[in-house]
Length: 176
Image (cartoon, rainbow, N blue to C red; front, side, top):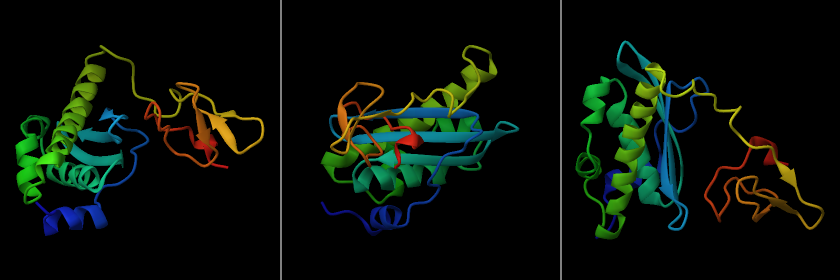
């Protein structure tokens, strides 16, 4: 099965890309072994998703799924957004090849995780979200253009944005 025109459009022209620095909730899912990592950021006003953004490291289907799930969720109440399923995402994209259906699971899981994170923060179960404070410091290697991932200590290329070993996003200071 080839990708539908809708998948190709959301891959080539993804909607809602980026971070929300003062996000009310953050959902991060993925598997660094297969290479798909998704982060979904939400801003909630009056129990409604006022803004939804994503950052995804993965294949074209993963990017299209992230774009679609954020488009589907924006403007919905939390309850409505929690009802968006992986099947809804795949259907909205005009279908996905069988070997890419797991991407739709990741998209729905990331959205639901962001909403749960918001609800836990609002109830006081977890501390308020700070995207910059929780990042580990950059560790510059000694020559050879190599640096070390601050999370798993694996050597990474000097210009890498993600660690290919653990899948973590490398700190902004890593950009030289």
